[in-house]
Length: 245
Image (cartoon, rainbow, N blue to C red; front, side, top):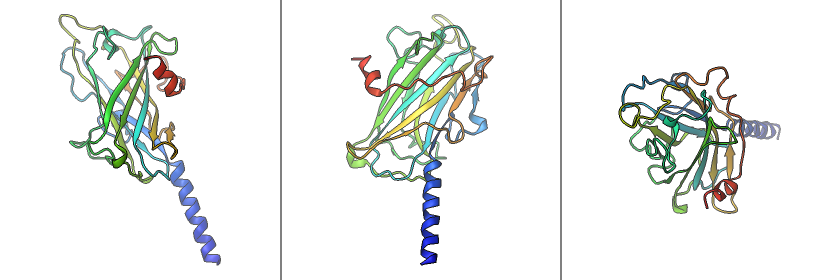
């Protein structure tokens, strides 16, 4: 009996440890939030930009049964008084409307972390809100990916999973029609990954960093620490979607 109680206590402690280990990572070109992926620099002297792939990943809480999708919130702030034209994406009429693309397909690599979606997720960037939170130098990027319920499975709390990648091109950096502001430092923060399950099963909102939930461009924001310069302002997805109906 004593051994059984001790074993039960050990298992409970292990479960608590796994649950508390849940977190998100963010960086350039691979998962894990390692120091080598913190910052991306670019001379801004070409319309060709390589290696500018932001990768978000997560260590899930224990207890999932059928993950069907993910909802992602990324906030960014520039060191300039207003968000530069070079960082204006997606919205009609923006300077670099098509220079940012997102994907949840990691079937071609990298292979450091686990790939839950295995190329079966559909979705993309749903909104790029700027200015955001009444700050002209801030923006919020919202991304959604989902898979069919038939593909849904639990995720392992012992593994780190790829969530998404966001790739920036160098389009309109130089030459005719160039967009100003490439050299401006920017701080980017992955504020949340929400893992969704079928209705009634329960979802998971992961907000705490595992190693690091932020990345910098051109050294980050001058005069303020990243991510401290990007205060979190949570909104429900319903209220955000209502802006675009």
